[in-house]
Every structure is written in structure tokens, then in C-alpha cells.
Length: 215
Image (cartoon, rainbow, N blue to C red; front, side):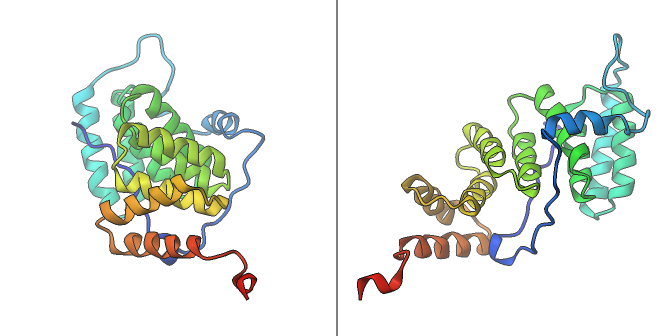
């Protein structure tokens, strides 16, 4: 399967504070507006789109190496070349969305993730990544919905579990199913910081809201 990345981030206890971006009336509308600024190296609408999937795959693989080195500017150019070869190549849209996310271009990131979802409806990575854009913009309900859609495809994926649990904790949820999600995360995740966060959050949720109430 052609690589399509999903973003890995640190656990909430060790994360730097996320910069909150204020979006317009709806994120999707803003994304369409922002798309007008995208370079003409590739076009997303065409009656007879150019299709050289092998060339697109090679450029996408090159971009993955650049992204691993955090050379996002060069990765963006490689992914634009990939999409100029095959605009319907979903992994390149998803990975370009990740590049934009790392560059704090949330409108463009969301647009690319939305496009990737349409092209790869059965692949959960782009839905998870779109959730990260919503969460970074403070839209927790939409973020949780996107994470939940990713979890439907891979209910035991620790990255999706962690992202959804974190967003729900940030929203102030205290339900039993969130506790079950945190307990599951503590068992399945291999990232020590996330395991510690899940366990500590469970302990905090079990404490009474007012510790003095029992005295």
C-alpha cells in the first residue's frame, strides 16, 4: 500500500501549548476560499485529468523522506509534483495536508485532508489528521467526530484512541465510555508518555470534584 502518513504528536502532559487559530464561519468554506491561493502546479478539477500514478508515487515516496527530516518546504514541492502527475493520488493529498499542518497553514491542510478522504474513503488516516486541524482551531466537537470516524475503521489504533481521548478530556467529558477509552489506551499504547497520561487522567477523573466535600 502506498504510504499515507498520520500525524504523531506528544502526549498532552508534555505538549507545548497549541496555537489556536480562529477560523471563519465554517472551516470547509474557508478551505475552499484558501484553495484559490494554491499554486497552479496541479489542478483539482479537470474533465480529463492527467494520470501518471507511477510518477506520483515516486514523488510521494521522496516527500516522505523529506518529511522525516522535517524539510517541509522541499516536501511540499515534491508533493505538488506528485499531484501534477496524478491529481487523484490520495496519499499525496494526505501528506501535503500534513506538510501544511506543520507549517501552520490550517485552511490548506484541512482542504487537502478533505480531498484525501473523498479519494480514500476507507482509509482512516486523513480523517484522524483532519481531526487534528479541528482540534488545533479549538473546534473540539468536530475534532472528536473526525477522530471517532477514524476509530470506526481501526478501533484499536492507539494514535486515534489517544487523539480522541485527549480532545474529549479537553472538552470536559467525564463519562464512563471515556474512562473505558483511557483504560484501553493505557493497555494498547506503546508510547510511555501516553500511557502515563492515560493512567494519570483516569486517577484524576475518579477523584471527587470537591475534595473537601467529604469532611
